[in-house]
Image 1 (cartoon, each protein chain N blue to C red):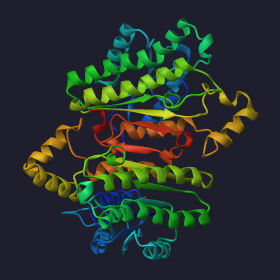
Image 2 (image 1 turned 90 degrees about the vertical axis):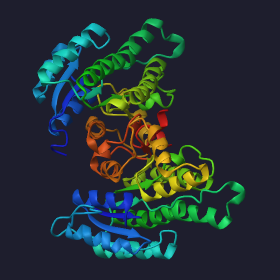
Image 3 (image 1 turned 120 degrees about the vertical axis):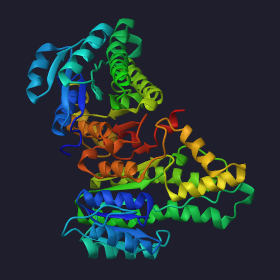
Image 4 (image 1 turned 180 degrees about the vertical axis):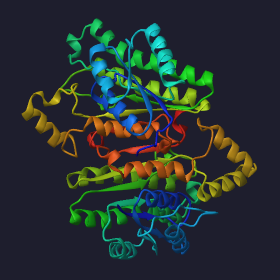
Length: 249
Length: 266
């Protein structure tokens, strides 16, 4: 929907690839100004080709996040009123092999990073007296367990994002800031592992996904754009699965 | 896009029909009330003013049909007439619904209990069945949106029939989503919270009488429980319907989307 986000200022974390980059493209196409945050400076500069301004930032570091949000406000000529928290890492490890260090690493990016960016952006909006919308990229892994690809740290981080989203929604609703989560299922991105074994992947799609196909990053971005837009004006605190019906089984 | 919207004479249904028309749909409006004809005519002419539901462009079709969705024959006939009027059906929005009797369980008659299930749940099933059959025959996929409620996700004292009907809608949706996915037909539920509709105001009048408060006090109490601090509007629901029936929701099926201002959270 061209123009639906005209005049909006968007910040997309993890914007250099996969779902984050697709979100940035979509927000730009709908008329928003967009700043991309990512830790990977090289990937970020090539991603900037889509028309968004790149800012290098380690999402785990509170000082770096604060500086990046301030820098983004400068680039956008005002505080970001759309935040897409897409920065995330995926790791597979059975619980008995999972080290505390690996646990901390995943939680630091997926959960702590979402908290840090959300808090910094909301604080700036509230100080400016402006409304906004936050979209956190969670996962269906935050809703259901996965015995095939054991990843308790990832699943816990994404379930944590859902609780964090509800709390953001409850605490910031009085300021006109909505917060919602998207829960992608099996999406065709560099993070996807299920298709590494094509036969097993195909069998999973047949049995586990009613629509019997992978989703695309663009399909996640379309839902993200809806949640950021005024079409979702009474939607807050929600978790929206984008999973081809997988969690309906 | 060729769309059918039930319960479209007024309120949420009229807002949904208006939005889909503005998004370019040819549209058939259904309602048990004869007012649906006037709503469709206003839509077709694009007349503004009180009760404005938005206009359609030249060449777009908006037709009103009187039908009781709890009547099997009426549903089948309405779908036949819709195909004749707009050439097929790609989108169905099952919005028709009635409030519960607001009675305690001992004082709820079987007829009252059956009535709310007949309209809200059986009516949704009948329309889904009739339209899904058409969509499968067309072979070009489709999208169905059923209207649940936040009161299909949590119980309410004196609301057993209504809550059960809306919880039923969510699981009906779930099941149909799984069954129809191979035909590329997506089925989702919207669960509105407290909406600024006549149905909700009637409920608050009833509660005010029961609690010995004023209507305005009831409105204030409800509003205070909503984090976004207001009742929802037809446009709030229509925005979510427009998204769910569009390609922007192409990988979303079998879900219940709460449009409730965050009412769940507190």
